[in-house]
Length: 218
Image 1 (tube, rainbow, N blue to C red):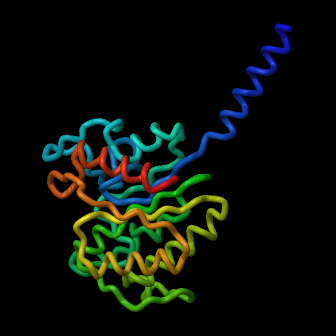
Image 2: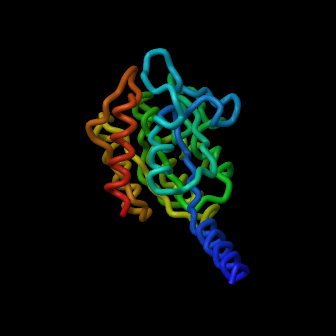
């Protein structure tokens, strides 16, 4: 009887482990934290002008713990754009989202949380394009976003993709993100009423992001 109990407990433990989903994040400064992202990735958090001081206060840690998931990879680079055009129209191809697609490990869920720097940098929108992208095409936001999703789907065919849209961005970028995600079949979660300090989510803002994700993803 004792042996049977031990075997059953082991099976339950193995089943629980197998069912624990792994989450990866491809993001910008909103998803950074010192010591979590790869070295040299220019994290924003912690920051003297923001009250988020602990990993446990970030949107992604709150969400992962609320769901009982585990973090696979957090590849978030402060100031990075989805497209290959950065601030001052500089070439951002070295560290944009597209350049980091292959760094997410083996996730079951991928959150794409970007577009903020594209909008803030006033990156060119370009035309909607659904295939055959070149590097020059992807210096524009619309084709770059479509290319990014296509690359992620091919690299991680078993992963569920979610795109998160920051609040208070330009309507042109909001509409572009909606159109690309709709065409590519990716759920877009549009944030609203996010409290921010120094342009970045505060403790209250981080909690609100988590709550909105929990509500949007059933």
